[in-house]
Length: 329
Ligand code: PSU
Ligand code: MN
Image (cartoon, rainbow, N blue to C red):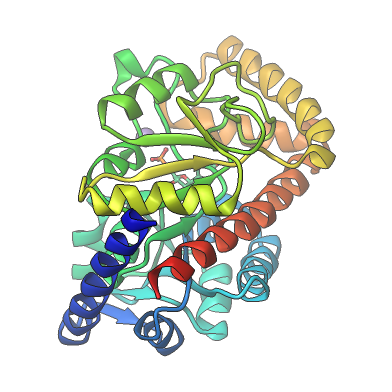
């Protein structure tokens, strides 16, 4: 409780400082609903947008983005979808901005390294976990919900293809709620890398099993477990109080009612991986090849499971944001 109170002061101070900073800074646009909620110390949940621009086909991307925002509101929090629109970093989008982003065919996938370029060129793009963490943290938002984070790719020890999401988690103090990482990545090395980066990883639920996006178990375990929103909020509050300046990763397993489809999808992932290897597909071609094959093999079931787990993450993340904000008053 004492830790939570101290964390609240910290968040409060940072929020005040950052909303002033954002007003002066023309590169950042915080939506009035978001700045009002932050000023009133109400719970806010940041959401990423690469999932809209690159993760799902139109119009499922738009309907999912709107459903996720509606879930956040229904849980009593304010959604703040982050994106780059015509060279400005937006924290919180209007309905029209969401429509434009979802139907745009020229959006850039914006990670930390891409921000200077897209801003200087006035471009539009969906922010990955790393870029969303940066923007949400600047706005003073402590909780961020996504589907899955990037990780260490298979053969990453040779290619060094390691998602900037992992290094961002090591350097930016925000809690990321996700369904773990896809099994097309090297999950063991991803967890090792997160440890090296000092990221506190906890599974949300009944076991420490670290989830693999479509399935509740990856064969690896998280170092910790939290069983409800209050425990998750206490963990985040401790991290903020300690001023570690690194993030927290909360891994939420896909709900059991969707796990059966998830296991079938996982089999398709393994088949697709074998095909990619047989066809000597390498590098950045691998992920799009696998995802397309998986969608073909499962006749669209992978998209449905993807949507279901994002809905669930939005619910859990909003409950955590509400629990955290209650302790802040
Ligand atoms: N994992 C998914 N779906 C996604 C992504 C990851 O299951 O849409 C997106 C997220 O935006 C994540 C990004 O931050 O891909 C990671 O990309 P890269 O591996 O290139 O760092
Ligand atoms: Mn990469």
